[in-house]
Length: 85
Length: 151
Image 1 (cartoon, chains in turn brown, red):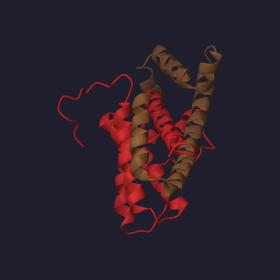
Image 2 (tube, rainbow over the protein chains, first blue to last red):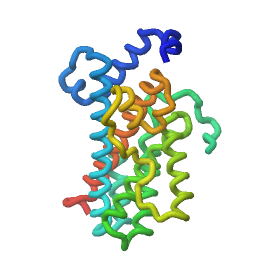
Image 3 (cartoon, rainbow over the protein chains, first blue to last red):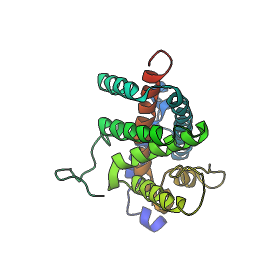
């Protein structure tokens, strides 16, 4: 892996890491200064895991809602609200 | 899967379009409703989750390694389902990392990550996170508009 990395500059990697950092929610809130690569990667892993959990939870809620709602009128309302936002 | 004519082959700046994502996901939800109306909540929830990852992957298309990996996984699972009776939701990375470097942990979480070099992994991760959070926002707004208070 090290021979490939020497062809890619350290600068590029640093830039990619800070791009990742800018996507993390904590960074957006606190405007944190640049963290180490290892820390950014760890936080990124945690963030992805929390996003997966959110998809899980929202799937559960949608499933419950689906059991009770009238899908056709719900669909119209959803489309309206999506294009409003 | 072929991109429709006129589609740019360069990576779009902000990922898949939101209306397309919404359209695909709503269509999948309608299908789940029609075919799983009498299933248990858990089974329906798994199908919705699979639909979420499928919509994400189809909207991103084959331009990204993570979406290609998800699409492969989904098709593979669909073919296997005919023979085996496995209920595990396809396309969903399930095993949290407990060993290895942070980059290895990331490789396990991002679809298709295990084959990537370091730079590719960082780029794919950024795109994956963007698309994943769009999907979450979409699902949240659907829940908000249909949930208690809505109809």
